[in-house]
Length: 290
Image 1 (spheres, rainbow, N blue to C red):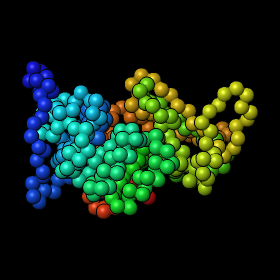
Image 2 (cartoon, one colour):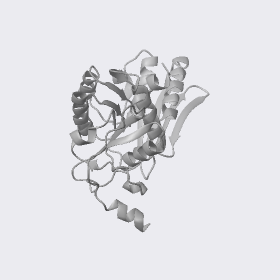
Image 3 (tube, helix red, strand yellow):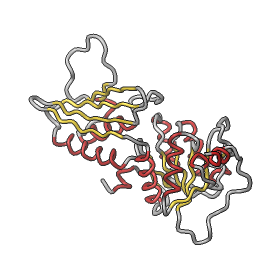
């Protein structure tokens, strides 16, 4: 324990070493390196046989700046946490970003300039911000998905199939629950589920989504997709799509118990990008679910 604590308090000195010539490992940088998701990603990268931590970025106010990115694990990776984007991306082939929209967009620009590919799990983007990312994908390869979990994306495929089969006579509701610290609602995953359903029904989510119900709402309008958001405790992420018909109800649910599922999915996205030069992809592309 004493050794681990000491390691946490030691700043890293010296430059990050570039990968050996001819290395087949994926050189991965992590944004938000000192956050909960950042820690999970770094741990997954260290445990991987084909990925190597090549950079760690965080905001300048983070207490982790200057310390080893893997210090929380009691290991020395030789990669310091830095607020300098150029330093953090110097030896990276791919940046994994689960931060905030403004920070992610700054990273998109930096990666575009340096030819670094991206895995984006950030949510809460406006349509205009999504357009900026799509524009950057003309020059670099990007996997962007509101949820990197393999299980969630398989769930989305099941939801798509159900929506096509239950297109008439069923009311559709999406219920999601997350921890008290989540700042956007509905979750990006819930919105993506709504988009998948709307597309399967030949509709636009903008025209069919219902995000609020209060007071005298009148009868439920057919062909709408309702959303409900729950915030509390340390819930990692629960999503249920309800198809309510006459005499029966179908529920398709995914519950995440750990952020490790997002990390493992992100590494699958990293491996997928190894074969891509440019373009905007999602987890359906990564998992072959088209």
